Length: 434
Image (cartoon, rainbow, N blue to C red):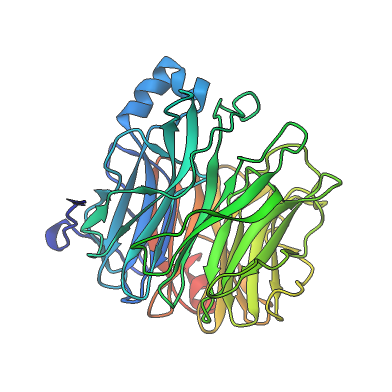
């Protein structure tokens, strides 16, 4: 079953200047948060975000949405079919109001495939039919017509009878959330999520589950377990496809001593056992709480670049690291912005010559979006650059590499989503901050 969600370019398109600053993409009067970006093989660019629906506003005013942790949100997407010069009119993806559960720390994700298909994963609110309590489940939808329409969503996670509402924040009886998604060159689609079905008061770590499509999202396997335990139940994972159709997956591992370490593992092409996740070079972070922080990845061949917020360092903040041996070892992580009072929410992307790291930081006043480039040996190139984002808080950046090698970057500014393009070379990026 398909529903038309037209996207129009032409007069309704939003012009994006490569040098004159950013443009607001989210509609006026809406509350937009948690953007995500993707580029498909055709060079088209998708900007996805969470839109706080009117239903959520009404629940929040009455207190119930915050009391039970349910989220009444919509998903919106805007597509550029001209390489980022213009974006079409934003369109809503979800068909039913009040089912999307999304926050900036567990945001819905979008990826593009070699065929041009757009794939979207998100967590959804459901009420268990026999128990009558809320549960979070992992959902998937796709568009095969350039985001003109999206298929009716499918639940990928099993709705179990396990009831952990006494220990899961918000009263959920179970959760399949903090998901990652990627599409590989062989037209497979991998959706991974943190699952609580085996959690107990004695072992409060999550498990790692996945559902895989081998036909471009037309059908999916039944959900399968990749890791039985020791996964931080509240840190979003990030996936990256390799040229050989293997998948890199980041997660925060819980060790026996209570430390929560950023790690990256690999899922072989065609399926099989996931490799033992390897720590990404930062200090162990001992915390008996939810960090709510993702570990981002950009990879090509044996070179893997990564960044994460690490509260275990002497100077907590965003830390950057890399591997040159395919993820067997990582260099000692270094602070991305040691002078900042706050640095958080990293995003990362790479082209043929450089890696671009972005994050939001606070030096004085409001939060700002900062960037820095690195060469493919992991060496920083040029200075840290602040994007000219205006007086409001600017945060939660996301980056995608365009077909021309430039970097599309989007972020949340107050309750709006903005986008612009950054050049492919570090000297040109630095010039934008002047």
